[in-house]
Length: 50
Figure: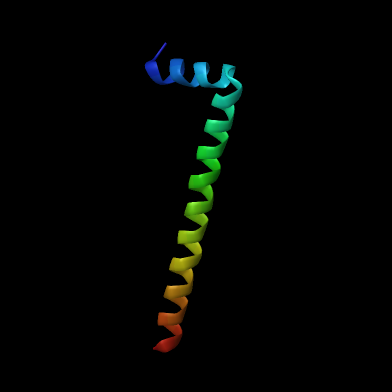
């Protein structure tokens, strides 16, 4: 078993580990959505400017 699988297995057994995994996923998912919206808005405003 790889070390990453061991860490994941340990975290999922613990109540706070589940919160850590879900919270980390939610943080980076929301961060990615914000960047996506920001890049689309900048891209479309530059396209409409020309």
